[in-house]
Structure formats: structure tokens, C-alpha cells
Length: 274
Image (cartoon, rainbow, N blue to C red; front, side, top):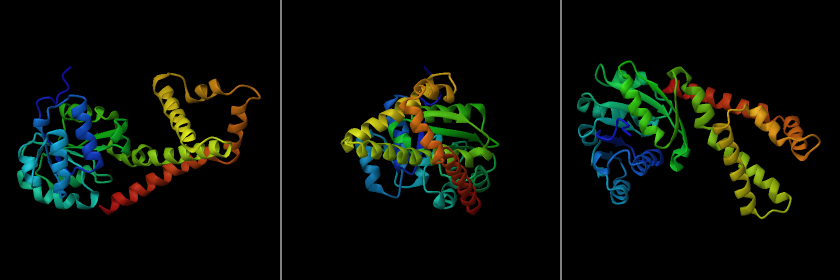
């Protein structure tokens, strides 16, 4: 089925974990040919490794990646985005710019690049490395429906996407951007409980991780409310209700809410500094 990116050339500026995850996801999903992917990075040894593993084209500088591409994915650390934009400004014609630099606003790109530059901002998360990312997508003033469809196709290759107005990106950062760390801590705590009760560490970790994975799949595929799903596991006077009572007494629910809110507020603070 056509996705809108099969015949486009993609340029990656930055090939860290997220950039490589995108390249890998697109190629494994067979959405694009390796011949149509160009990449640049300050770490040339990393580029050579990607060239060998994925058969993509590598560039010695950012401008080369821009000139040869229809879509430019900015996957560098937020602090160096202004430097990158200054470098590529004169090479931008009609390319679509997709930013995955956390906290960097669309306005930052639109103000630094030629008037009318098409910009889409995306907030994925680290689960992109296993093609299970949660990504939120926002469009700039010049981005069209076709541009949004292109961005959606790219990020659907590594997980699931939602389209949101940009002012909600800080909430996304606090929830799904930071969320994997919260879940890693929960998995670790569940496994610790299993070890306390006599399970071997690796067995406990496997059971905890698979439990979280299975529960997440039920939420995504079952139309029931999460409270209804919880009730499916909770029988009167049973083990689960005893555990849930302890979680409520210890404030697990409010702690998770507060974690998302705190991370969202921090994202707003960082955004004001860019």
C-alpha cells in the first residue's frame, strides 16, 4: 500500500539512538529503499557503521544531506539545533523539515529558516528502538496535509502516532516522552517483589515485563475502560484487591500523576530556554 514516502529521499541530521531507530524501522517495514536515505553526523565512525549495516548513503556534512533529500529529519540534541539551522539555512528550498529535538518549538525553525519552510515537530520516545514508540505530531504554519501524512507514515513505522496542537507537546513529554522511565521503575519494583517472595531475578524480571506488555496490549486492543479491565482481574476477597488496597494506601496513583505533571512542567522550563 502506498505510504507517501516510497519515492521520497530522506536526510537524517543526527544518527543517535532515535535517528538510527527511525532508519531501522523504515527499512525493516520496507517503506523506503536504503538508496533513498542520506545521513550526516559528527561521529563519522557511527555513520560508517550505519552505511555498512543498512546500506544507506552517508554525508560528510549536513548540507550534503539536505541538498539530496526531500524530507530532512533533525535528530540532534536540542542545544545544537540553532547551530545546525544556521548551517543548512541556505540549502533549504522546498524540503519538509521534521524535528524530533525535544523542547525545540516550531517557531525556532520557522524563524531561523527561509520564509515558508515546511516544519513538522514530533515527540517520539525511546521505545522507537524496539519499534513500539508513542509519537505525537504537530504541524507548522506552512505544513500541508500531505506533509503531515508523510510524517505520520514515517513514525508509524516505529510505533503509534497521534496528531496534536503544539501547545500540548509538554504534556506529551511528561507522559509518553518520560513515561518509559516510569514503567522501567515499575517493572523493577514488581520484579523486586517477586524476588522477595523467592523467584529468581531473571524469572521475576521476565514475568514483570511480560505482565506490563500484556496489560498494555489489552488496553490498546480492548474497548473496555481501564477500570473495567482492572475489575476483570479483581475477584471479591482475592489476592489482587489486597494488592490494590496497598497501592492506594501508598499513593501510587497520585505519585504517577504527579510524575507526569512534574515532567511536563520541566519540559516547559526547558522550552523557555531554547
